[in-house]
Image (cartoon, rainbow, N blue to C red):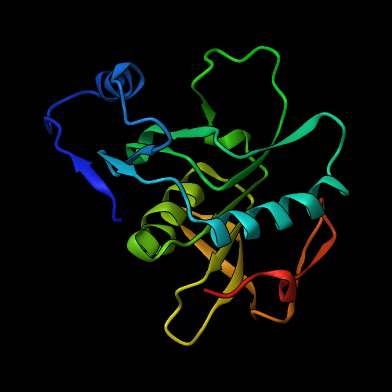
Length: 194
């Protein structure tokens, strides 16, 4: 099943768009994001997709500080890119003073992880990294199950403007290292292939 887009008035303000996103009754279990000003409704991720995210999450718990958390369904806001994005994993400090329960500013994230789905891999490869880099998120890990040359994992960092620099790439079966503050090696041979 592929994603559905909800047409919006192009003159609508960011606040109006977020209010619509927050107040609409979306299909239960779906993932609803605002990507480049367009509301996108996607089905829940598939089993193998979730297994990969869970294995990364398990490894991350061993290295993050006590006052950080790993969120699976937390929206992060990038108003300058008209984005309300829900990465597969967000690593961020816990904020007791959060303004809202629906999302956090993307700039609070230390790492975001996306695992591509066949129907919307382009968003994880193009639109989302541009938003994450714009927000200044230090690290972006892309697990691309549907890459043309076979499944790969790419770590991006050093955001400048809306562009990341690729720091490391590994094919499934190889290890990839996350730098400080994580200092973690992820063995991708644990990932199920498509």
